[in-house]
Image: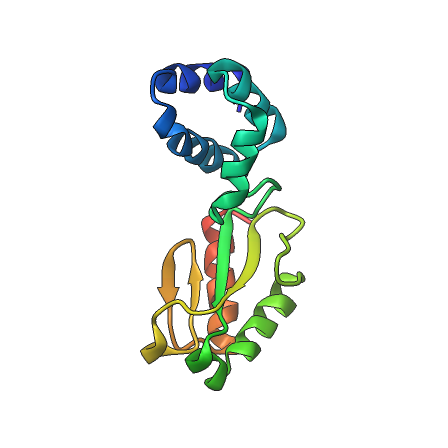
Length: 155
């Protein structure tokens, strides 16, 4: 994000200290993470200590200080998913994407994470990609899903 865009965003939030989380969300939506230079610019423009911005960025799990993939893959490892093969689903994603849990593919398209429960136990095992829940996951479904999101991205 260029500095002029950041400056315009900061101008919108100058008088709204409580809206700083929304500002950080806007930056993250554009950049897919919170770059250090963007946080420094916000700190300077809004006269907010950089440490306070880092405090917010590390408190909320939705924020990332390192680049993440365009597509966020969350695999459930809760009890129902575990019993119904959730670990195999995670392993299929790892194999197909060529990354470990917590990593991002080299092309920047996918990040893979596990979560304790996604609340869709009736259709376990479950994976969520970009906020869309996919139930009854199998190796074949994982392959189809990755192909679908790759084609959406033009890859």
